Length: 176
Image 1 (tube, rainbow, N blue to C red):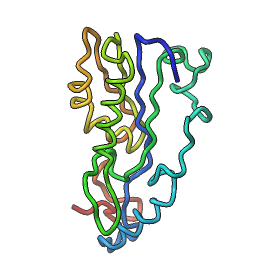
Image 2 (cartoon, one colour):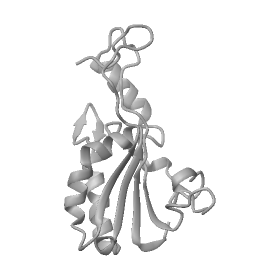
Image 3 (cartoon, rainbow, N blue to C red):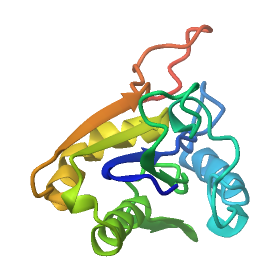
Image 4 (cartoon, rainbow, N blue to C red):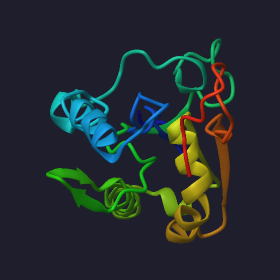
């Protein structure tokens, strides 16, 4: 969404990670099966994305100043989730492509080349769930790549901090 050139809100969509839902005996095969299933949805393939996301933008993504008094008029860059690895993938495994890291770098490069983001006074990097994890992982590198002329880059992850703890049934679903 086009807004003021002085302020950018870059949001990385969340969507969970690929994982084997059999938490008692997870396997690589089960995880890849989940990834293969996701590849047929908007969380795993751009084939299902609309050209522009202009509906369902609520809360801090809303253009309504009543609903979103802080960011309503900022330039919004909404990045759909695609690789099941918090924009960190860089591999091909069993016919599945995990290239979220390259996609994220390409998007940042496109922003640098096609917008006035380097002259922005403020750039806020945000995301929810696994998109927030991506902000934790990549905020410093994104800030460095943007190399703002005088403004600042701020990270605002919304959740995305996943504890390595047993679930309500006493099962560790994220084994080391």
